[in-house]
Structure formats: structure tokens, C-alpha cells
Length: 292
Ligand SMILES: C[C@](O)(CO)[C@H](O)COP(=O)(O)OP(=O)(O)OC[C@H]1O[C@@H](n2ccc(N)nc2=O)[C@H](O)[C@@H]1O
Ligand SMILES: Nc1ncnc2c1ncn2[C@@H]1O[C@H](COP(=O)(O)OP(=O)(O)OP(=O)(O)O)[C@@H](O)[C@H]1O
Image 1 (spheres, rainbow, N blue to C red):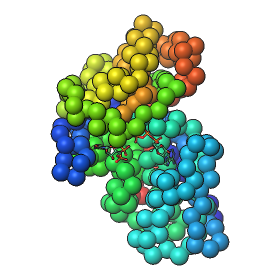
Image 2: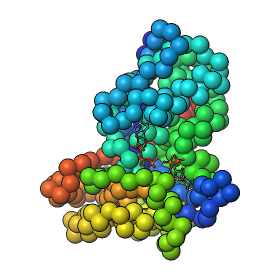
Image 3: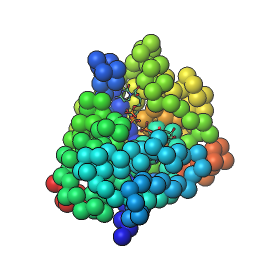
Image 4: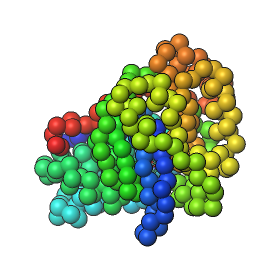
């Protein structure tokens, strides 16, 4: 048997860093949303007891460094599963881009193995596995739009975004999330108004969502990647309603409700960067009611 799961990327609409915790992680308060830029994760039975990863991207690890491998391993250990699995990942999400590509593959693996191995895991049991792998994995288990607190693993759902386009531009460099969090410790932090963003989403107020976009990590990544400021300036000239770097970067996204502006942004930015995508926010990742 084979189970196929869509694994959507995320963007951070608001990301505040509140301090350093005793475990070395940073306390955050974020608003995230899934988008329709997605990897495909297929889990199928394999003879024996091994976990085998196949990916379409040569630079993604196929051993236990792959987050999907780690998800399968934790599930096998926790539920004493003596079966093999082959996990095939078709990568569409740029890697080390601030879009949670590896995290969403891990979350999709958790959902897929729950079905393949008929485990009957509850949502909170899936979260317990997710948290062992990385901070963003918990959000990716359900996706949609949500508030994330703690180190990012405490999730509270929000209503979906008003209909809009998300245009993403990935500069041809990668950044280390760990390094960016380290860098901000010695930099002044610009705090976004996360609570106002939450209210704007609850009211479906697209104009306020755009004006409240903010990311406390943006300054640190901009010091390393000069392209980010150029991309943002270019998107502004073209006429995006809201512009921000996602996560630890370096991907920059623009929001617009106008198809003509989405087209202009796509065409304008393609001449500038090779990785440009126009997608919609993604309302659901999985059959949410199954996991309630
Ligand atoms: C930047 C974001 O993507 C925004 O959604 C997340 O905060 C990062 O989530 P992630 O990539 O899943 O991060 P993890 O794999 O858990 O951690 C990578 C590294 O980032 C740093 N890190 C991460 C999350 C957090 N709240 N504080 C941290 O300081 C830690 O040094 C950690 O070793
Ligand atoms: N399934 C996977 N897909 C992509 N990268 C993976 C995967 N598993 C492990 N990795 C490793 O994870 C690292 C970070 O890649 P990823 O695409 O998840 O970064 P990111 O989008 O910046 O993450 P985040 O937004 O959660 O900080 C890469 O160095 C990559 O080698």
C-alpha cells in the first residue's frame, strides 16, 4: 500500500522574538499560514525493517539527517513498529529558504504513516512526534493559519486569510536558521505587533494584514543577504500591498488581492531571480476533522 500526502510550505506573517530560554531556544510569538507551494510525500510498504528515503533533489540528504526519516524513526520507536517504509519526496519547495520545507515533509510523513500503519494517532500524539524533530514541524501537522508560541510548537488555530495571492521570490543563497537566531542576540530587535495581526486576521481585514506584516529576524538576515532589500524595493515599486521576508529567510513574499498585480510581480521579479512562485494561501493541509 502507498499513502500520498501534500506537504505545503509556510510563510510567517508576523514573527516576534521575546527572549532566550534556558534550553537555548528563543521564545517566539508568530502567525503562520500554509501556502499552495508544496512537496509531495509518498510512503509505501518496504520489505524488512528499514527506512529508505528517495528525493528528487540531489542536495537533500537521504539518510537520518532527512526530517522525514527522523519522523519515521520516532514513530517506529514510539509505537514499536517492526515494518519497513520507503518515503519518496518530490521537492518543489526551495531548501533552506525560510519556508519550512523539511519540516512540512516530516509532518506529511507523520500523517502518512498514521494511515499506512493504521496507528490511530490523535492530533496531540502527532504533535508529540513533531516536537522531537523541529520547532516548525508542529505547525505543519495541521497547517492552515495559526498562532505559534513557545519555541514555535504551541499552536492555536486562526481563521483562513482573505482570498489573495502570495508571490514568493527566493534569492540564490541559503541561510542557516540557527545562525540567524544567534545573530539577533547581539542586534536590536524590531518587534512586530503580533496581537494586532491576529485581530486583523480574525476580522478578515486584508489591508491591515498587509500593513502589520513584520519579522524580528529580517534585519539579521538582511545584513547577510543584500538581495533581500533590493527584492523588497522592487516589489514595492511594482505595487504589492504587503511585503516581508519569511522565517529566517532569505525568501521574500508579497501579498496582493489583484490578479493583474500578481502577474506584474511575477513578470517583474522573474527577470531578477530564477525562483519566483505565485500561489494561494492553503486553507487545509489534511482532513482536519480526522485528527480533532
Ligand atoms: C524561523 C522559523 O522557521 C519561523 O517559523 C522557526 O522559528 C525555525 O524553526 P525550525 O527551522 O523548525 O527550527 P529548529 O530546527 O527547531 O531549530 C534550528 C535552530 O534554530 C534556533 N531556534 C529555533 C527556534 C526557536 N524558537 N529558537 C531558536 O533559537 C536554534 O538554534 C535551533 O538549533
Ligand atoms: N525533507 C527535507 N527537505 C529539505 N531539506 C531537508 C529535509 N530534511 C532535512 N533537510 C535539511 O534541512 C535543512 C533546512 O532545510 P529547510 O528547507 O527545512 O529549511 P527552511 O525552509 O529554512 O526551514 P525553516 O523555515 O523551518 O527554518 C537543509 O540544510 C536540509 O539539508
